[in-house]
Length: 166
Image 1 (cartoon, helix red, strand yellow):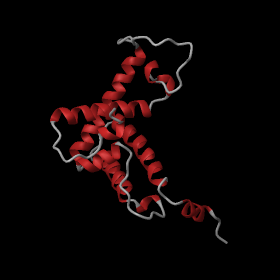
Image 2: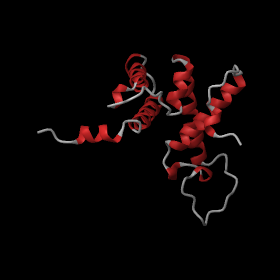
Image 3: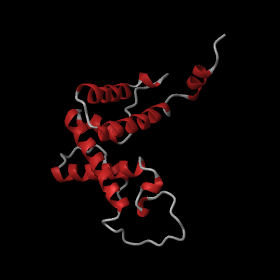
């Protein structure tokens, strides 16, 4: 069975346009589910499924379904923009919330990928004036990306930063 990580692994074979399109669709769908509150998701994507609710085919014209499809499309547009403006490998690291390891980190800003992501967000927000959907998506991604970088900071370094100075 193919895992989510397998879909974005950097392989040596060149990707066809169809492979890239499929990867974008999968990533957009995954991000839409990940960054949408449970009650705003279609039932089939909810993290906490109601036990009394039966599995049924979604109504394609329901309001929840329409909003979800619009959300997926907004993520797809954000991903396509990132891929067109950044190095492809770097863009996929940002999209997959997989920062490149820079060795021993003492703080978040020691990670080059994090700094590059913030620079990209600022460029899109201030210089290129992206739309509200893209800016919101970038803000959500940057927060999640920061959390991933923070996980790589050794616990003793985090403790040093929180101790009061005398």
